[in-house]
Image (cartoon, rainbow, N blue to C red; front, top):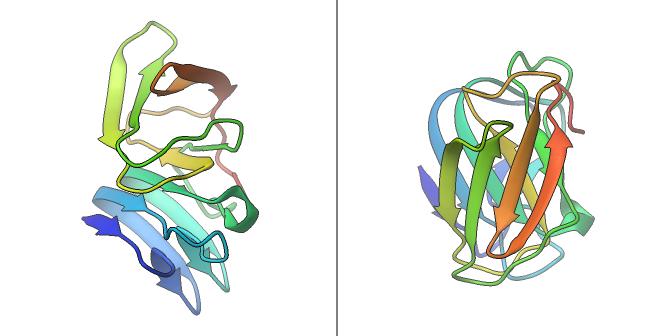
Length: 136
């Protein structure tokens, strides 16, 4: 699923569960909308998700998750920015081209493991972080 939002991207007035598939979200151009927006809890137990949006509205995955993720608020990009995720050995796990500007990235991939480090690239910027089961 590929979402280019004009409001909230993935929006739930209750709980949200991602348990498979591939989800790519470019959040709305308005910093008042969330690329991932939920009122209850959000969890990921399978699949691949790259969700980019605005840090002021950024939400991550909660303690019901069984798959590791990263929430990165230190990198930003514009429409057309290339996002890549590499493991600690330099293997590329995922890539995505954003369709709108952003300053936060939520990544959860089936190949990610809790406690392992991953490097997220946005064009020529990069940040290395440790994946966890909770990114709220």
